[in-house]
Amino acid sequence: MSGSEHCETGSAPHGHGAEAAAHRHGDEAAPHGHRASHGSAAGASTPVRPYRALAVTASNRASAGVYEDRGGPLLVAGLEALGFAVDGPRVVPDGEPVREVLREAVAAGYAVVLTTGGTGISPTDRTPEVTRSVLEREIPGIPEAIRAEGAAKVPTAALSRGVAGVADRTLVVNLPGSTGGVKDGMAVLARLLPHAVDQIHGGDHPAEPDRPAEPDRPAEPDQSGGPDRPGGPDHSGGPDRHTGPGVPQRSGGHRGDDPR
Image 1: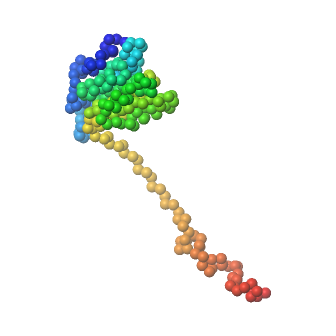
Image 2: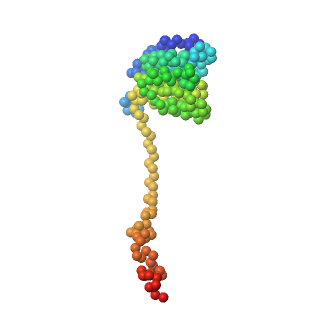
């Protein structure tokens, strides 16, 4: 790993030129291809610069240079494809260094922070715990969807303990450490991030598309068959229930009283 990727824990999140300055919440804007909808009518807003996102790799060995970080660059590529201006990846050891990076990112006004690594069940996997300590509101549906996406291919993906939520107006999501887990997570986030970020920053809900009118269903024939309904069987149980042409009636006396 290059020296720029192995950052000290206490340093501020890396930036690219002017984007490195901490933009407070009012300065944030929508991802490329999306329009900010802060109370404005649909189509009335103008294109603006993208939201900023930070990619973080939580790995004891990658941060020590034992092996190359492969998950972080995938986060960067996925976020850039969604139109975010991306910083990182920051590569830090799991645990407290992750907490510090998240706090710095929230203070700097990042719209999105994605982490990879440290979400498993080994003793050193602590990313979910430190992330939860930073969050103000959790969004359990996001990690549930990510686990479901991965478990459909690799059953052990269900062991990931990643969390997601909001701190101030920063959306934080934990992704697994494997490259496959990152790809599955980004596949889910590609469907969610633009709308989620817009909502966190006060955007309106998008109008639902018009649904085609359902065709009128023909009235079903009446099957009640009551005595007052033509064509229905007579279930009244009256004295002439079983009478009709050619059906003799019997008297109500004893059999011995019948004429022979």
